[in-house]
Length: 99
Image (cartoon, rainbow, N blue to C red):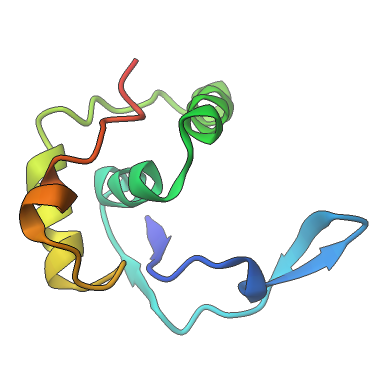
């Protein structure tokens, strides 16, 4: 599955307050969906995570992240996707996408 490693609002063309096109994809990779979802889990607010999970589940079965979360967060931290936060804090972030 394609994954964008550096999501930011500035990477989109916006029309009428909605994202219209993605224009910045140089930091992309092929990755299992669990890695991408573990990244979204740390980027979203609790409310955003609920909406995201609901919308995702309308299209695809939502994977169980519990057995993947620690490994995925270690990989994301090693890649410095969100900078270099303290490891213990990074690993302790709430599991927002669990049902």
